[in-house]
Length: 188
Image (cartoon, rainbow, N blue to C red; front, top):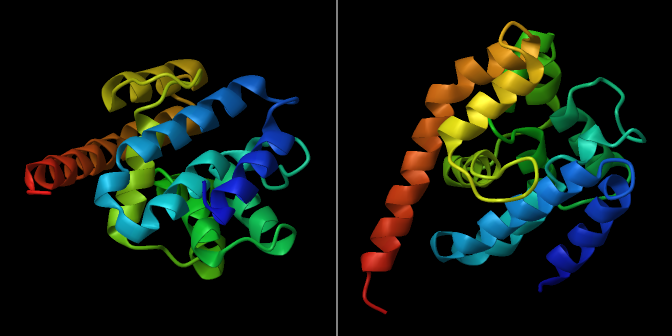
């Protein structure tokens, strides 16, 4: 484990395990998915794993200020935890967050405060999140989107956002799986 992940896991656990145990299990599962695609990330593998375990800390009752968890989590990481800027930016923009920010009237704040990381890292974090159930087990993005829409309701802000984001979520998954397939075909 790198210094970054040694720091990230206990922080995420301290914010999620007690108040939101299911969210903590999900975050651990997302980090586990990150480890499974490390071969396509090179030196960014630890960065992605840290962002993966931290991606949902904005749901913590202690951090929820705007009600938009990517923004709340990223602000905490930046302002309180003094986290690596790249981890902060990945948390801020995970899983098509810009679309939900737009629906909430927070797009300017999100984009103004947090630059996006490279497309391949954003794809990778989206892949990890959308291929993990709320309980932390592997799934596929179609079932995950359906679960989210069902949990929040199809006409809710989240239900509408996740359906709007579905094509990009599927495209992200496809791009990641293609990179994994190419990497596995490379001679060692």
